[in-house]
Length: 421
Image (cartoon, rainbow, N blue to C red; front, side):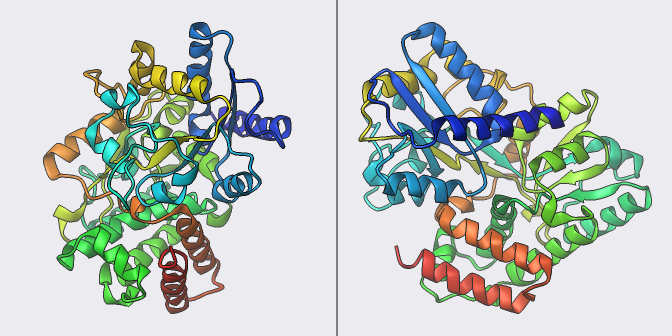
């Protein structure tokens, strides 16, 4: 599996070399697709190959990267090299890139799109339009190895902070690594943080949207919310104590190797997208999935559900019709609809009766039915903010800033980056 991930990134490097300086081709049948989420590279390449059989005259140049994607995208947009398809976070970032995005509201794909997904693709400012499509719905939570838990005598996944701490001690004593963290990736932190943000909002009797808005306006302090100031930072400390030897050098491929190889019991910041690659390492891996124990109230150990990523079609594309034909086929054809569950292994963003074979999706669905799901908090901020937040947390882990200094920077940067928009 490790080789497979490396190949995905090598493909990215090759694409970057091949496509450097290219935006939209003068050929109306050539589509340039520049998106994040390299973990779906293999699945998207299969999608492109399938479409080649439907439209043999269309060429799709696919480029993917994760680190520094927002920076690279903005450089392309600022230089006028707008990809025919590009990606952003859904929610607030819909308006950030709205001027470059084609409104898909009258396209056939909208009829296939789940209403909850379409809502995250509308303009938050005006409340209308469909300015993106989702590569996936998602479940966010803690991926874990049921086999290790059972071997350590832990019969149920911990639902509270105290239970989690006790579980870490048992797992460590048994010779396993409780966590693999992925802390070299800035986006891992936003996936974890949103669980604590949801608990903070719930306990303050406000919505996540209102809590985020108060930080953007410079009115809130991290220390006002013990779920953030105490519980989140304590969890990061716990993950460092019981995690990778070099957490700031651990990326997605390292997490996959540690989890799939039976070395680590829990994976941070990941979701359904890692299941296939983990099983490629160990087909007998007992995949478990649950929420983060964010407080000592078991009811708040919830997964998060929603569509966090938007793929945008450039309104300036010289290949606009070819691009629209491709995304409509993706969302409406039998192959395209089946692709979400059978190939990509994601929560389908489209209406379908297909049942997933992926444990994370099945367990996530059951948990959402049983306990409900917390709000998708990452959608209320832009990736410009999330990247800075991740870098601040990396500095905290490195020991170059203490908790209070980190919180002060979080407050300052949140208001500066998001409040200015």
